Image (tube, rainbow, N blue to C red; front, side):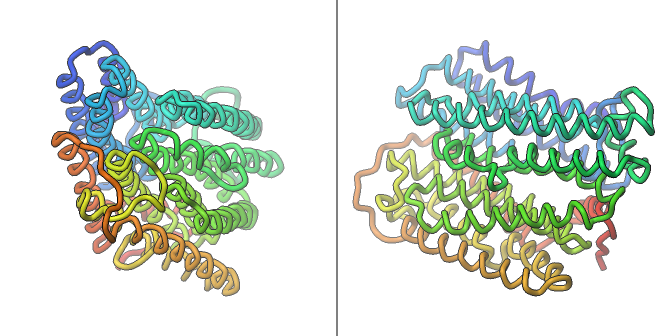
Length: 494
């Protein structure tokens, strides 16, 4: 099983390096499709093993527990559909002469390295190496954001780099402070950086150092997760990046930043209880949800609309973790994985809109059901999911979070529901106008092969969305029980 983990983590890196030297378009695209299949297969082996109750490690640095397996599931599944989609979307740009074959291969190198860095981050049992791995993904992401080399894309890439480096510095302070607290208990050495060891001895750690470490981690890793007010890089980056990159940034990168923050929160909660970290996470969650809700109302660019929707949903997940309790924490995790599915689907569909129309203005896009039916259906169903309408999985997670919140503070629940209504109105005002009606502009041609790859990615994600909205698989139940347990009482399924 350790072999499956190594394949899951390092195959994207190998494929990325091969992408740099391959000079045949079809071979390069077959490599990406093969990588998607390998990711899904290795992920299935790793997740099924952990769901059966067998946690395992490779050497002394890699360790898979239920939370790591949960992230592997998310990263591998959406990463695989992202690869299929990227073959179609970027391949169309190659066909149109907007890039050379050399740049096509370079894109997949950066894209695959990005996946590798995120997969490595969530499987490391070392807070220092986790920090290094997460920040290495920043370099790949920045190059992907500015990949099209337009003035606005390069500006967005630099903005992302500058703000991310501020987050890097702050999260490093948090890591150093955590080590300062742990080395007095565990001694000088690698064990003092081990997540498993830190959680085990959390009650013996210096409370003051722990509090400072969590605050720095909250701000630093919160920058990576797009938490308000550290979010200002996100709308520009998502709007200017190639659409496959926007999908991965929103669906995966934000969740990886949140994952790192949750690792620190689990240690802090174990030592100090939920009374310290919970209100901080709750406050930043409400701030993110509030700011995103109002900005969504005034957007005129559909990619920026989806970017602010990502900030909203990160806020909702944080509210779940801040509220705490079995329902709140489970709701937060359930929200993370369903947001990854739904938001990537929304960006996949938005990319189809962009290829057909050639622009990102909401007012100028109508009649997508007639122009590109699969993209139109995907965008509409994704909008329903993002708006929290049943039977979408995000409706279930929001209901669970609201229920947990109501038990502790009904007033906060009313505020939470009011903001959800506002975001619902924003999405239902913008998206149906794009999907329905008649087209008023001439479409740009799109090759059949592009349609096939993009349609495959959208349909696979839609199938997972529908399945997850109606049914909670047993393996996901097996993962979420111990996952909620590290934050307090475990959830129980009857």
